Length: 293
Ligand SMILES: [Zn+2]
Ligand SMILES: [Zn+2]
Image (cartoon, rainbow, N blue to C red; front, side, top):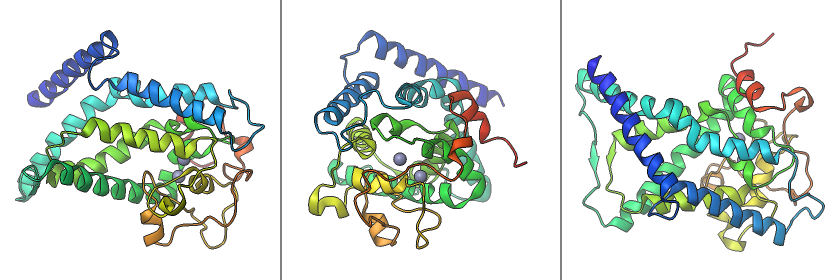
C-alpha cells in the first residue's frame, strides 16, 4: 500500500511541476497548452475561411460547452484523477502479470529500432487499438451511455472533437496501456509531434470543412467521412454505426465499416430522442451513470 501512496504523490508532484512549467513558459519546448490553443485557432480559421455549411455561425450551437470539454478532458481530468490512476494501474498490472508468471512488462522491445520506424509502428498500433475501442463504445450498451456525450453534438465544428465523457479517457488509456505500454517498449523521440498530428487530424475531422483529401481518403479519416459517423439516422446495413476511424480511415475500409452514401453536409446529427438529452456539462457527465428507468 505504501508504494501506491508513493506513486500517487510522486505522480502529482511531477504533474504539478510540468503544469507550472507549461503556464510559465507558453512558448517553451513541447508545450501542450500552447499546442491545443494554436491548433484550435488554426482549424477554426480554416472553418471560417472555407465553410462547408455556409450558414453555420462562427460561434455555433454548443461552441462554449465544447470549448470547456476540450480543456477539461485535456487538463482538469488529468489533474483530478488520471495521473494517480494511470500510474497505479500500471504498477498493479505489472504486479499481477508477475503473479501469473508473465514478464513484468515490455514483452517486445522495439526501443533499438530506427526512430521513424518506431514512430510509424506505434502510431499504427495505437490508432488500431482506438478504432477497436471506439467500436466497443458503440456496440456495448453500457459503454454507449458514456459515448453518447460525444454524439450529442447537433451542429458540427472543430471543438466537438474533445467533447466526450471523462470515462472515455479511462477506457482508451487503460486499453492503450495494456496493449502498448505493457506489451511493447518504445523509445519515442517524436511523441509530441505524434500528439500534435493526431489533435490536428481530429479537429479537422469535426470541422465545418468539406474535405476528403482525394485518393488519400482511403487512408486518412476526414470531415466528409466522420460526419456520417455522427448521423442521427443509422442505415440498416450498419445498425450500430459506421466510420469508427480516429486518425486513419483504413481500418473501416478493411473491416467494411465504411459508409459514405452521399454528401453528408446537411444530415441530421445525434441519436434517437436527442431532444430529451441533457444540454449542460454536469448533467451529461451524470446521465451516463444513471440506470435505466
Ligand atoms: Zn462514436
Ligand atoms: Zn466525432
